[in-house]
Image 1 (cartoon, rainbow, N blue to C red):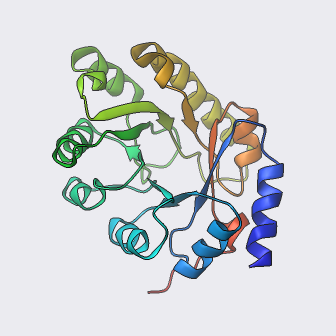
Image 2: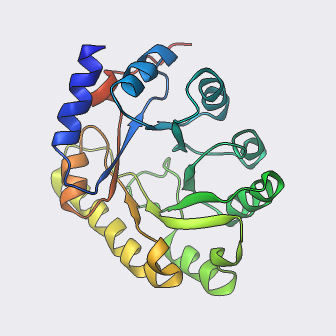
Length: 222
């Protein structure tokens, strides 16, 4: 318990005032999340809907859950009743599905537009030109149960700081490009993880997603 609390304190101290910390709890047990909760943290990120639902049921209602992984449209209905933010919105079809499911629940769900900047085809996200065309023809702001809060992205998986900085700078450019579509509510630039979040903050991140620096390395075993 002391280790997680100390890790949280250290990460928080490294962030500028106003930067939101999402503790990435995917694959970590409920007990670890509860320790972070008891240390005062409230925002947690998960990447699998089934795991997210199970943890939501087992943990305090005060937790603010963020979906940060790739989300299939047929899984939206499971998390729509409670999820606070879906960060990984990478298609018009997914956004429109979130709108329908949020309306059924009588809720408004915050979302981020995931933009592909990495030099890896395996990573998800909008092409910037494609997203701009979509916004010009059918803006997300016309969806009453979806609130577009900003953009999210993942940098190329490399130790080359120049490449990572370029990716983060491109995400900041996209954030600035799309902000006029939505106005003041568009206030979140989510980028940076345990290994690169200080650079992300330097490039303008307002939200970082940190897992292993808080909880330790993840257990990928089933």
